[in-house]
Image (tube, rainbow, N blue to C red; front, side, top):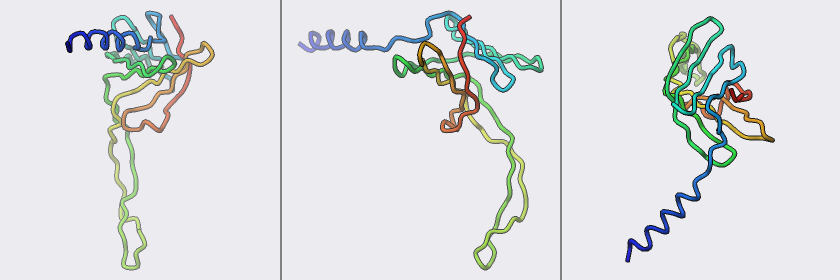
Length: 143
């Protein structure tokens, strides 16, 4: 009896899956902070070419959020240099600077949020640990 209910339910769930808006084989970003990303949708690999000539490569996963929005999550880990003041409270409760620190912050994997607007694929580049902050924006070009 449960088999007869389960089979139609699975077929409905499979048929309701959103289709990807990325229908081509390769896509390329316009200049992203002097870097150009190329995504190969068939092999799920990407390459990053910088102006200095260095090239980075890796794999990515896609997550279809809706018919207009897709996430591409790269398998890299980004560390960003940061610095700041070391503060301490004095007797009156005011904070005073007692030193400075230099270090690195783990931003996590690179994420491209791709949105289809008026037949144009636009993207927003961000990181896993800083989803609210946008590093760059641009358009995705089909190659």
